[in-house]
Length: 257
Image 1 (tube, rainbow, N blue to C red):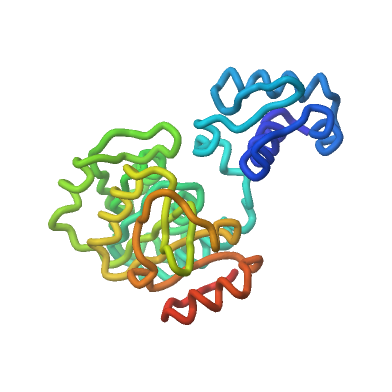
Image 2: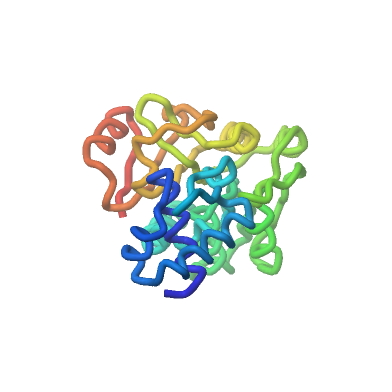
């Protein structure tokens, strides 16, 4: 297993379990204890975890992992979700897209789909990585909000986001979130991101949430929007049936792909 793949697995284990043990982790990943110790030391150097005697625990930073370490999680599911969400957007629409691994895939799908060159697609985003990819697409009119960049998510946040979005009317907004709860709504771990994402949702005719099944039924710190503001939730086939049913009963279309 390559080093980057091990790091991703280690961070996933920390995210779900809160701690890892060197010997146990070496057995689970099929490598030596010495390799795991070196991996943990490197991740600790990057402030992604806190080393302990014989292992590591979650640090404050590790709860909100940098985007590059999230890409490998449920990659196939996120690609299917992105294709399904992009297919819901008519050509020539004006679309808001926030930051995240799944929304980044949606942006790529919108840019390369067969009808992409027929009419101009307008994309408004606060994600600098998405802006970087779409800036070279002649068929995309790109609008980037202002704001302060968050290195963990590549999103621009703060009052400058609101000042740009004020007065704009979007046909659709596609939101990636950290949690979708039937009662508590769509939420994220950071309040500044939640504010920027809420602003994108508020100026849209319809809001589509894209979230893999691991995020359903979860809670997160800062509310982005109530589920009543969401028209469609696109998730994967592993979504818990009871959660899907509870969300559907609120009049939200749920696509499990």
